[in-house]
Figure 1: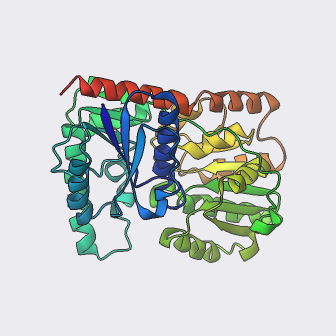
Figure 2: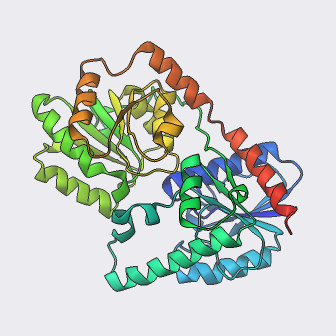
Figure 3: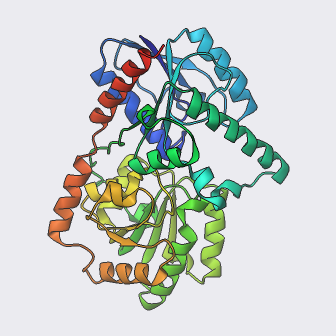
Length: 377
């Protein structure tokens, strides 16, 4: 079978955050576990050389077109047809709606349907944004109903799909993400990153559903009682994170007490995880949530919202709070500062939980979906 993978999201730096991580790890591990099928990997200029081919059955194809655009619909359809693949895997719902090539799609979440603040958040002209929203809904409908198989990363997302769309449950397979093996960040200087201990850590983007203003408000109150504390936010700097920086100033947080680390390397993230007093994940809705599991792999205490997929993915190995319960988050943060956030047993259990999410397993299970999809055409 000749399989195509839309890897334009490839990587976390030039690609698409969590989806970028998913695409990169999936391709890396498929190269290890599949020696029979051939693959065409569609990439942009920004990540073309970042994708390393280690299996001679894999080849790269340059398609330098931005996702969520009209050009994507035209160019991807043409390029997929020209590549003569028998099955496509789209790692997100932004598929070329008029393509006739059979496909599998991964739906990580339905945030645009489940979270109104994210659906309407934009820096674009409202009219243009409205047109794009209509296009997104058309593409999502086509992805759900036109796919041979649907992969989701959690039972939560599967339930969300079944709530919003009339689709047979057996068409949807839950395949959890993996977690990258903990790296050695000991050579990274926190001082060079502008980070000092003790600090709370968040890793990821600043989109509205991540609920970061809530976290800043809680930190602002605690920081007044503990002036030595710092809040570190690691991820891509964009208009949303800049708005967050302005909000931090409005809350009266001193400039030195909040640090934005733009596009950190994997080893820099490893160092940040390793030394954090507490990792905080305040997201209102999440399909899987790789960062808190990564934090567990470093033995770092984690506080996460009791919402969406978080209890399913993190189990009993973290401290939970409701997405709007500021007092509870402050209590958890205070316990972390006092050294009461986590026991040695919880650290060990957290590491074991993180180890249960393996990218090789993700790749093998995805390969089974490709085989199942082939039988349907």
